[in-house]
Image (cartoon, rainbow, N blue to C red; front, side, top):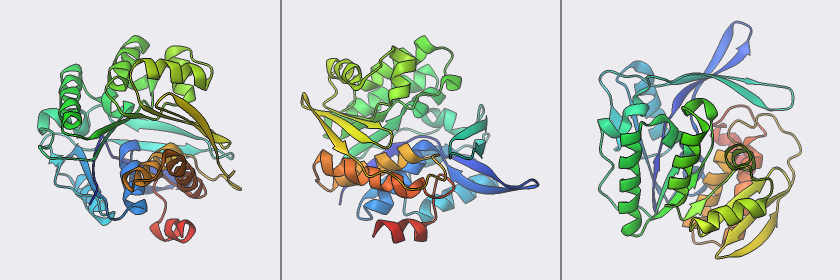
Length: 302
């Protein structure tokens, strides 16, 4: 059975239903990826490492993890902190904007609350948001843990997912993003992230930058058109099928990574993984919310 450890923060997602009512869900980049990975590869033992509180929302969140088949044994419970929250607004084109309440969330102290598990994993996945919410000592602890997993045979996967508001400044973000890139085996860089962080304007600049850091598999999604991949110094493009209707792009990238990792863990080539990841993302952006209803998802995946 393939096994995966995903490290990050899940939050309460609030989205307007009417002028006076909101819909509550649970979401967050790494949790979204965990859900779609598990849905796409049910045989995978997907473990989520995070911290929550002991309040009602924290209990409901942990129950939601279990409902999706995600292993909760590495979810730490803080006695003094609760989970973060965000409000999402989606415009007519499906693009979204967010308001956050997460500065004092339990997940921001996850590595002071709990130690990383002493176990073997085929893949360990972290995002730039995971890194951004931690303080420097926890970031160093995370790097040490990833090095230990990698030495034991795990592939380290990293998506920079740059969010300026989570960093004290761009120099700090650049430095830590490079440190995690230098450690990873598979990277999912974003074109917008690299323009903002490093002034890169094309995939060749991104690939050259990451290959110089030692990244062996680089997967760059170019919107609705293609996925550009560099693997072992070989660059190729994978065409993807355009989506007829875009409703909500909230977790498109997270869903893509979940699908990609599912096929990777199943032993498929990266070109197959890229096509499948794009298909999963296409399903997800056709409905509202970061985590689409399972019936809707599986009907379109089959």
